[in-house]
Image 1 (spheres, rainbow, N blue to C red):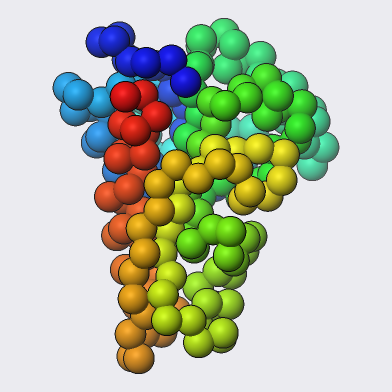
Image 2 (cartoon, helix red, strand yellow):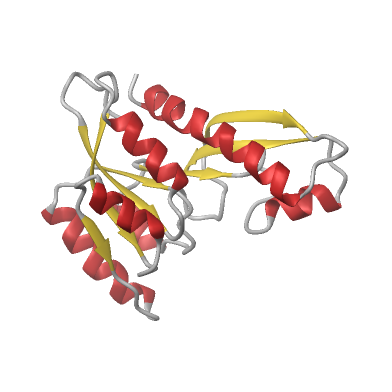
Length: 191
């Protein structure tokens, strides 16, 4: 990634749900020292709360959903090009990007995942962590590549699992750490 020298990098955030990491990234992007400017929030879910939040924050939003993902991607790539988007943050985006899409933004798409990768790739991470009686879990920010949750790790945060942790408690504690490390990972990329 190119070093950041004052001009903020035009960024899109892809979401599918409530958008708590999106809220955090918007707040971070408005910090003077932040290297990114969020110019677009995209979702494949019309009802994603993050879209409403982005509108309140006066950020362009885009909803496209198509069963044939290659059609969705074609439309999306066209809009990303028009808006001059240079960097993409996945924040709870629940679709797997195609190799073609990743190739167009190679080294410029990052994701946050609620586990200490390479352990517990994919979905239901907290449930699997608890079922396996793990002592530690955490979250990881990584570059997106052609394999699910397998790109180069940028930053991780490890947390201890307590005896009284359940799905809700653990999920909440990991999310809190996600909000801390996502901006730090972006700063690291552009430093």
